[in-house]
Image (cartoon, rainbow, N blue to C red; front, side, top):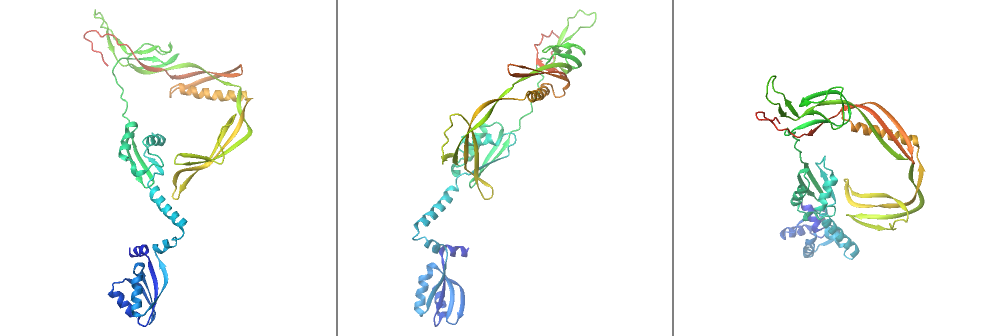
Length: 411
C-alpha cells in the first residue's frame, strides 16, 4: 500500500555529499521527514529516497549543515504527467482515453441469454429491445427488475427472469414455464368415424357399440363405433329399449387406397451475371449503419448482394456490437432453361412418398405403390397410387339421445 501511495505522490532518489551527512539524518528525524533506501558510499556520501512533496524541506536541511544534494532519479505519477505539460495533444488524448474508459464502461456491449431451450434467444432479445435493452444502452439507467416483470407478462413461455449487469456484459437468466399436461375429459358423447375409405381388417371396440365388422367396406366419415349404445329389454318384456351414452373408443385398421399427385414445370429460371458490380464498405456501430467508399443504389436490373462482415471482439472472446465489412452487388439477368425430365420425375416421386408417410398414422404400412407420369403444357405431373394398411379411427362429438326414465347416462 505504501508503494502505491508513493507512486501516486512521486518520489525522488538523491545523493547527498558533505562533511557530516549523519547530522542530516538526525535533522530529518527531528523534523519527522520520511526517507528510506539509505545507502552509504563512503563516510561523506550517502544515497536515500524522499517524497516529492518533502524535497524543498530536505534541501533546506541540507543547506543548514552545508551538504550538497544531487537528484539521480524521479519516479511516480506526477513526474509522468509532467512530461505532457507542453504536449497538449498527448495530454488531451490521455484525458479523453481515461474519460472514455470511465464513461463507456457503463454501456452494455454484449447480452448473453441462458437457461432457455424451447424459447429461442432471438425472441427474448426482441422483447428486451422493446424495453430499451440493447447493445449501447446505458446499464446503470436500466430498471432491471421492472424490465423482467414486463417481459414475463408478455411471454407466457417464461416463468422467471433476472438481469445481471457485469460491467459491459448483461447476463439474462430465464426459466421456462412447465406446461400442465392435457387432461382428457370424459364428458359428452363421442362416435368413432372413418378418416378414409377402406376395407376393415381389424376392429376392437373398447367402449361403445360397433356398427361394422371385419371385411366391411367403409367410406370416409362413416360411423364405425357408436357412442349411443342401445340397451335392449329382457326377453318377453314389454319395456322399451334404453340408451347408454358413452365416449366411444376402439382400434380400427383397414386397407386403404390413396391417390396423390404433384406437378413441376419443365423449364426453370436461372441467373446469368452481366458483369456489372458495385462494392460498398459499411460500418455498423451499436446498431447505427454508416456507408462509405461507395454507394448502395440498386441496379436497374436484378442483383445479388454478397456480405462479407467482420465483428470486432476484445481479448477473452468478448464480442462487441461493432461490425465492419463489405457489401458487393452483382447484377444479373433471368434466363429460361429446360430441366431434365427424368431427374424431375424422380424428385417428385420421392416427395410423394414422403408426403404419403406423413398422411398415414405412425403405425401405418405402405403395402404397394405405383407411379404414373404425364406432360401437358410444359408441366410434368406425377401421380402416386398406393395401397396402405393403417388406422382409420377418429373420435368426433355426437348428439346424445334422450335417456328414458330410470336409466342414468354414463359419461
